[in-house]
Image 1 (cartoon, rainbow, N blue to C red):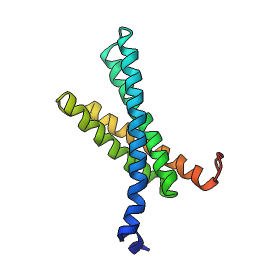
Image 2: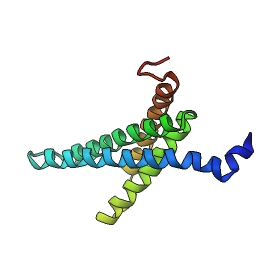
Image 3: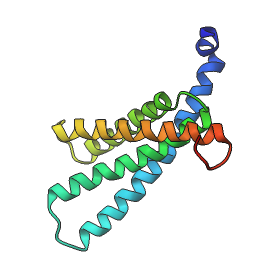
Image 4: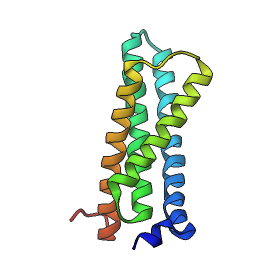
Amino acid sequence: MKEKYLSPRGAMARVKPLLFGTVFGLIISVICLVLLAWILSSGDFSAAFATSMSAVAGALGALVGGFIAARMFGKQGLIMGAATGLVLYLLLLVAALLIAPGEMTLMSLMRLVIMLLASGIGGIIGVSFHKSGARKFR
Protein backbone atom coordinates (compact mmCIF):
# COMPACT_ATOMS: atom_id res chain seq x y z
CA MET A 1 0.00 0.00 0.00
CA LYS A 2 2.78 2.43 0.88
CA GLU A 3 4.62 1.72 -2.36
CA LYS A 4 1.73 3.24 -4.31
CA TYR A 5 2.22 6.60 -2.56
CA LEU A 6 5.99 6.51 -2.80
CA SER A 7 6.07 5.90 -6.53
CA PRO A 8 6.31 8.88 -8.90
CA ARG A 9 2.84 8.09 -10.14
CA GLY A 10 1.39 8.15 -6.60
CA ALA A 11 3.15 11.41 -5.83
CA MET A 12 1.84 13.00 -9.02
CA ALA A 13 -1.68 11.96 -8.04
CA ARG A 14 -1.27 14.21 -4.99
CA VAL A 15 0.60 17.08 -6.64
CA LYS A 16 -1.91 17.79 -9.40
CA PRO A 17 -4.89 18.38 -7.06
CA LEU A 18 -2.64 20.38 -4.74
CA LEU A 19 -1.57 22.65 -7.60
CA PHE A 20 -5.10 23.10 -8.93
CA GLY A 21 -6.44 23.84 -5.46
CA THR A 22 -3.65 26.32 -4.78
CA VAL A 23 -4.16 28.13 -8.09
CA PHE A 24 -7.92 28.42 -7.62
CA GLY A 25 -7.47 29.44 -3.99
CA LEU A 26 -4.97 32.09 -5.04
CA ILE A 27 -7.38 33.43 -7.65
CA ILE A 28 -10.20 33.67 -5.08
CA SER A 29 -7.87 35.33 -2.55
CA VAL A 30 -6.69 37.90 -5.09
CA ILE A 31 -10.27 38.69 -6.15
CA CYS A 32 -11.27 39.14 -2.50
CA LEU A 33 -8.23 41.34 -1.83
CA VAL A 34 -8.99 43.52 -4.87
CA LEU A 35 -12.59 43.94 -3.67
CA LEU A 36 -11.27 44.75 -0.20
CA ALA A 37 -8.90 47.36 -1.61
CA TRP A 38 -11.79 48.94 -3.51
CA ILE A 39 -13.95 49.02 -0.35
CA LEU A 40 -11.12 50.44 1.75
CA SER A 41 -10.39 53.16 -0.79
CA SER A 42 -14.01 54.32 -0.77
CA GLY A 43 -14.23 54.92 2.96
CA ASP A 44 -12.41 55.63 6.17
CA PHE A 45 -11.60 52.31 7.80
CA SER A 46 -9.12 51.41 10.51
CA ALA A 47 -5.96 49.41 9.96
CA ALA A 48 -7.34 46.67 12.22
CA PHE A 49 -10.35 46.31 9.92
CA ALA A 50 -8.11 46.01 6.87
CA THR A 51 -5.91 43.42 8.58
CA SER A 52 -8.80 41.26 9.72
CA MET A 53 -10.55 41.46 6.35
CA SER A 54 -7.35 40.43 4.57
CA ALA A 55 -7.28 37.35 6.82
CA VAL A 56 -10.89 36.64 5.80
CA ALA A 57 -9.90 36.96 2.12
CA GLY A 58 -7.10 34.45 2.64
CA ALA A 59 -9.46 32.13 4.49
CA LEU A 60 -11.99 32.22 1.65
CA GLY A 61 -9.29 31.40 -0.86
CA ALA A 62 -8.02 28.60 1.37
CA LEU A 63 -11.52 27.19 1.79
CA VAL A 64 -12.07 27.07 -1.98
CA GLY A 65 -8.57 25.73 -2.62
CA GLY A 66 -8.94 22.96 -0.04
CA PHE A 67 -12.34 22.07 -1.46
CA ILE A 68 -11.03 21.78 -5.01
CA ALA A 69 -7.90 19.83 -4.06
CA ALA A 70 -9.78 17.32 -1.93
CA ARG A 71 -12.58 16.94 -4.46
CA MET A 72 -10.02 16.16 -7.18
CA PHE A 73 -8.06 13.75 -4.99
CA GLY A 74 -11.19 12.10 -3.63
CA LYS A 75 -9.91 11.14 -0.18
CA GLN A 76 -7.90 12.45 2.75
CA GLY A 77 -9.78 15.74 2.64
CA LEU A 78 -8.29 17.21 5.81
CA ILE A 79 -4.72 16.45 4.74
CA MET A 80 -5.15 17.64 1.14
CA GLY A 81 -7.01 20.73 2.30
CA ALA A 82 -4.44 21.63 4.94
CA ALA A 83 -1.57 21.07 2.49
CA THR A 84 -3.27 23.38 0.00
CA GLY A 85 -3.81 25.98 2.71
CA LEU A 86 -0.15 25.81 3.75
CA VAL A 87 1.10 26.28 0.18
CA LEU A 88 -1.36 29.13 -0.35
CA TYR A 89 -0.29 30.78 2.91
CA LEU A 90 3.38 30.57 1.94
CA LEU A 91 2.66 32.09 -1.50
CA LEU A 92 0.67 34.96 0.01
CA LEU A 93 3.33 35.50 2.70
CA VAL A 94 6.13 35.70 0.13
CA ALA A 95 4.07 38.11 -1.99
CA ALA A 96 3.33 40.29 1.03
CA LEU A 97 6.98 40.35 2.10
CA LEU A 98 8.11 41.23 -1.43
CA ILE A 99 5.64 44.11 -1.64
CA ALA A 100 6.21 45.48 1.86
CA PRO A 101 9.25 44.01 3.58
CA GLY A 102 8.53 43.60 7.25
CA GLU A 103 8.63 41.07 9.97
CA MET A 104 6.57 38.12 11.04
CA THR A 105 4.02 39.14 13.63
CA LEU A 106 1.44 37.38 15.73
CA MET A 107 -1.12 38.20 13.03
CA SER A 108 0.99 36.23 10.54
CA LEU A 109 0.76 33.19 12.78
CA MET A 110 -2.97 33.74 13.29
CA ARG A 111 -3.45 34.00 9.52
CA LEU A 112 -1.64 30.66 9.11
CA VAL A 113 -3.94 28.99 11.65
CA ILE A 114 -7.05 30.54 10.07
CA MET A 115 -6.03 29.44 6.58
CA LEU A 116 -5.15 25.90 7.73
CA LEU A 117 -8.52 25.56 9.46
CA ALA A 118 -10.44 26.97 6.50
CA SER A 119 -8.63 24.81 3.97
CA GLY A 120 -9.04 21.72 6.14
CA ILE A 121 -12.78 22.36 6.38
CA GLY A 122 -12.89 22.92 2.63
CA GLY A 123 -11.08 19.63 2.14
CA ILE A 124 -13.54 17.74 4.31
CA ILE A 125 -16.45 19.26 2.40
CA GLY A 126 -14.72 18.52 -0.92
CA VAL A 127 -14.36 14.82 -0.11
CA SER A 128 -18.03 14.72 0.92
CA PHE A 129 -19.00 16.19 -2.44
CA HIS A 130 -16.70 13.77 -4.26
CA LYS A 131 -18.09 10.68 -2.53
CA SER A 132 -21.72 11.59 -3.00
CA GLY A 133 -21.38 12.31 -6.71
CA ALA A 134 -24.04 14.96 -6.32
CA ARG A 135 -24.47 18.13 -4.36
CA LYS A 136 -25.70 16.50 -1.19
CA PHE A 137 -23.87 15.56 1.98
CA ARG A 138 -23.86 12.10 3.48
